[in-house]
Picture 1 (cartoon, rainbow, N blue to C red):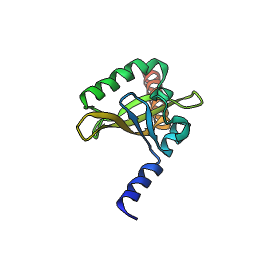
Picture 2: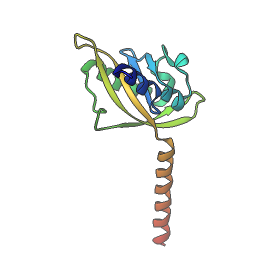
Picture 3: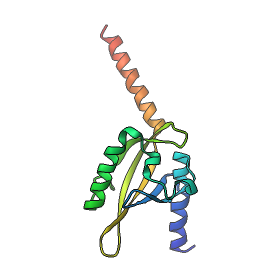
Picture 4: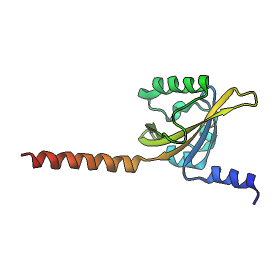
Length: 144
């Protein structure tokens, strides 16, 4: 297997979501991991706005950050800092995702879009929330 086949397979078949959206926020690449997390097939997602996975209440904030990253070519959510946000599955239920962002530039250095590697953390987020509630309850019972 050559390096290009390896790269293609690891991106296409990764359990994590990998997507690319152009400078306007239109999805241009969507792997099988994204389908597993969000429910949309690549055929359904490609050429759609990122809004298909962004909750209504977070869209303004998302587009503000997206535009800032496209303008400046910088993000704080790269290798060392993950962004954790709620997202929307195709059937409407909420999922929790963590992801890093990869700015993409053309040969002249101009921003052409943003890639993201996403992981569904819905289950672990719910477990942490339940543990916090349990700890709070135990502390309240202990102070009585």
